[in-house]
Length: 287
Ligand code: SAM
Image (cartoon, rainbow, N blue to C red):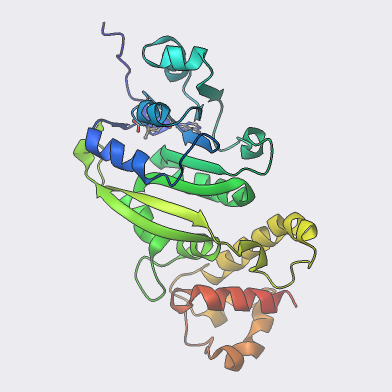
């Protein structure tokens, strides 16, 4: 049997990249130079992105859940030498549980990259949102449909919870589409690569953040959690108006600000509300 043989595991969302030009474009999308950056790949798999990353940067962290693939990265050429020389640091873990803070020793931030397992891509994005303070940028391959939802604007069919949650905290930019035949096995859907960068002012999005920077950072996760619940409530039933979705919830008090924000809660649905207005409404709800 070929020693490179590995049967792709569906439960780990394994679709391995094979298109050299696409692989290079993804690696080149990383906006970092020099050896001071912390780079972390989610799901290295058979190393399609890992090898060009190792050729470009001195040290690469990878987080992988599949024990067979971890074994191969440690023991097969060309990865074995990188692993033994500590250029390739392998974290044998579930990326959903991984603490990015463990990779950081001073004030550095992490560049995340990965062809994400599609079955857990949205939970992974939410997990990284929780750890936004450790992140410099994310270059991810996702299903095209998920990327289209992340970048969608209000009043378009793809605009929903994911668009609001991501665009509230991050600058998002679709880079390019990738066809199924660029992978083995080929997925059933188109894929896209997206660049996601934390907004410069993300800590000041919520106006009841404490003035003291240290304190602001401390209460921020709690506010993100509350905001997540607020957005979930607004989109609870997509076809219903804000009036109906907020009825009998803690957010029904927001109706008194309708005029100020020029919104008619009995007419508009969550899909019609801009990110700026969602933030404004949330801040009013916390007064
Ligand atoms: N980077 C490789 C490539 O582009 O060919 C593989 C990408 S494949 C779509 C997803 C990878 O994520 C697989 O290697 C899979 O085993 C790994 N994976 C799946 N679930 C994971 C999890 N919860 N934590 C860490 N890695 C995971």
